[in-house]
Amino acid sequence: MDAQPYATAPADSPSLASLPVPPLLTSEFDADPGGVYERLRRTYGPVAPVGLMGVPVWLVLGYREVLQVLRDESVWRRDVRYWRARAQGWLPADWPLLAGYEVRQTMFMDGDEHRAARRTHHSALRPFQDGHTPQGWELRAAVARYTDELIGVLAAESGPTGFADLGAQYTRPLLLMVTTRLFGCPEELGDELVMDLWRMLDGGSDAGAATGRALAAMTRLAAHRRARPGDDLTSYMLLADPGLSDEQLGRELFMNAVYLNDVTGNMVLNTLLEVLRGNATVRLGLSAGQLGETVNRAALVNPPVANMCFRFAARDVRLGNFWIRAGDAVSPSAAAAHRDLLALDSSSPVDSTISTRAHLGWGAGQHQCPSPARELGGMIVATAVGRVFEHFARAELTLPSDQLPWRSGPVVRGLRLLPIRYELHGDVPLPGARGSSGEAPEPPEKPRAVGREARGLLTGLRRLMFGGR
Image 1 (cartoon, helix red, strand yellow):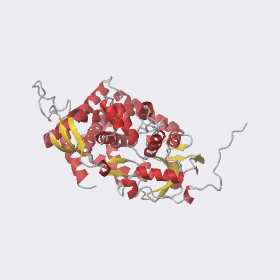
Image 2 (tube, one colour):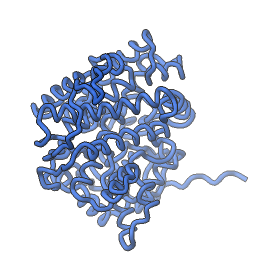
Image 3 (cartoon, rainbow, N blue to C red):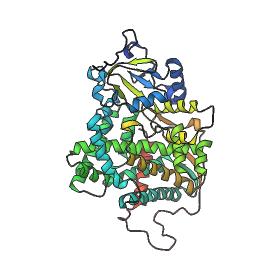
Image 4 (cartoon, rainbow, N blue to C red):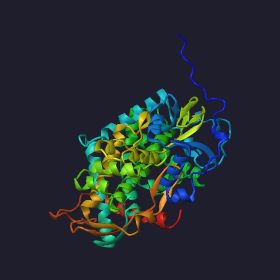
């Protein structure tokens, strides 16, 4: 018996091109994205047509529909070559987000090509996955040491009580320091790379140039480690797949740098914010000493990636109240899906297994973060959050939570700064101080001179954060 042909969209069903598309990125969205998601849902249902910087796309709002798109790779493809608007030349040549989608790396691959690339990532990340290997133990020790050093630098510069920005003075330098160590980067990687990743994800006028600069930096790193292999992720990637060119490896490092610095950094800041503004559900996990629970509950309320990267329909398919045509772009919204999920549970107490396991902070389906990366990311976030509340006797926001400045772009919604008034416990070690035994600190190479590194990163990031972008 012949297989049944796939259904095609009825001729009288509206196409994306025929619908009015309200612009998503407006001042209303900047101020209250949740309100915009709810209005779109009331108007269109779980899938809505929107304009994204002048380009029509489908925004997927419903939790069930988002999972459907993320999990069914036979219908929903990641390869940008499926995008009909791109193939037919409808996209403006300078459309800000296109440069990122044109980077050919694992995130934008499908099928066997994608599975082979993921195997390389799994193999390269495995030595760092847990604390039972030398590499894993050393990385975890380094993350904890970096957090202590950054808080020590804060104490040395501003005193045991004062004001701080947990973004510029803690989270962003921490993630850059972790990247430098994990990737085996030479010191000159610099804080400018982090800002270029921001510029790309925010989709500003300089997104294309920022993408090019970040790719070039990672390609140089790939060449550096090919010539001088070390005990780092870059070298293990080459070991897992010696056929990778410097350009190919640079693209994979670029993707990992985006996730490590921007996505993981947002998860740290969002978790800290939910605790500081008194979210009782999130604070419950912290008070019980369950940092993983704390992070997952915060990710449900405020996911690190608001609207995920596009998927492209491989064939006509019905989703929500619309027929999506082959080649249409859809953006699964984790932020809207989480609101949908929490609304479903609002009539009864939120079940802990649902609240900690249903968030989409690490994605879902075949393209979700590889398990070693999820474990590493979770460790970094939990350590960063836990160390703050170990060292700070008191911390409170210096702005009302609804007045905090956000980067509200097409992909991420991340805090620009997290300003606090703080009081430190009296046992915070100052950079370069001797231990309680009177012994001198370890020599600079084992571990590296973290205090000097932290101060240099803080100086550069302060200049970039407060000197304009």
